[in-house]
Image (cartoon, rainbow, N blue to C red):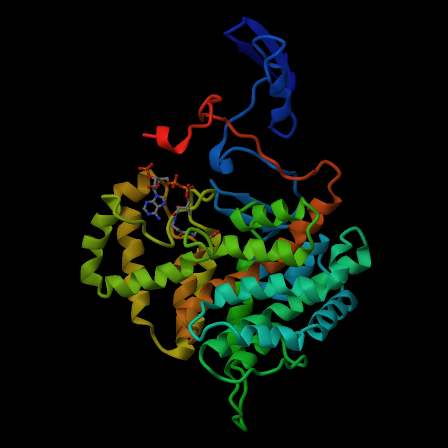
Length: 429
Ligand code: CMC
């Protein structure tokens, strides 16, 4: 007998329940019928950090962590990285299909048309302290954008939504470049919409009035590929925040500011920055074994290793190694690459990492490329945010249109005190 149901027997009461299975999941709410008595609240599932809970259904990205597979809308990441462009991939993720040539030119034109930011924002960015971390500036500035675009609150108006998507994708590189220029005390460069997306970013960051200035096309292409690799990754921490904030119907700027804040942490998008600091600390190949021993003793983690979903080689890390070769051929070798390669070799043979299925993730090599391209370490998570932005927007749109979604509101298992009476100060121990 084959039936798409699960039978649960509650040994407290001896009662059995038949719960339906759909897409290999059961609905957590179906557990609520399992009660010891009628007054009982009913059973819940307990899943700190959502390690085994699907909070939504999605049609955007497939990650098969056991096989090391990543597909956007069905297309393997390897093919997109080789053949597509970042803005085309952004379109694919947001609208579900690859654009035809007319759709693509319209999309690119709309985004590049929205690259200028309001002068108030430029002044706001100027007011950060000279050593402000650019990620803090990015988070604050995206949040401030919501004050300038009140039409963004109209989240059920299709045209208003489109406009915010163009604006966000268009303006983010400008905010990133301004954060960088502010940090190094140089005047802002205003966007040049005739350039490609990553080309314009590099131009805004680097240009200093040189007559013969030209963005290196290989570096612009490498950055474009890195952005493709970061463009979307289903329900990761920052995307879950984008959806969580979006579920309260906040505007997409507020939601994206929160998502960027989640990305900032060293366990997520801040890992590329942490990897670079780690490789600098290791300093020489000879120091690797001692460093790995400390990791195994639990003193700290090997940054850029391990992933909640990938229990195999992260397919993005494999593509990134090739990008690293292209970039280093132009910029010259990076001694940190030798340390990274040796570190990977040692870790992949070590029982500690093998038994825990810890492989290099996307951030292990991305930092080395960014550094070779001349980005300061604290810009690395900002670049990750720029790459991930279309993914956040695609997931936000999917959330808003999903009739099953309501405001995100997890339950808790309360383990605190029973009711007790207020104690006056003199009676407290
Ligand atoms: N170095 C050493 N040990 C590790 C590492 C690591 N990088 N990652 C996990 N472990 C160990 C961990 O100590 C635990 O061992 P034990 O079972 O003995 O307690 C086991 O592996 C499982 O770890 P976990 O913490 O339960 O795994 P998680 O799924 O909760 O964490 C992670 C995933 C990415 C946060 C974690 O692997 C980590 O901290 N990695 C380093 C930070 C990093 O590179 N983050 C970037 C992730 S990829 C980009 C992105 O999507 O943000």
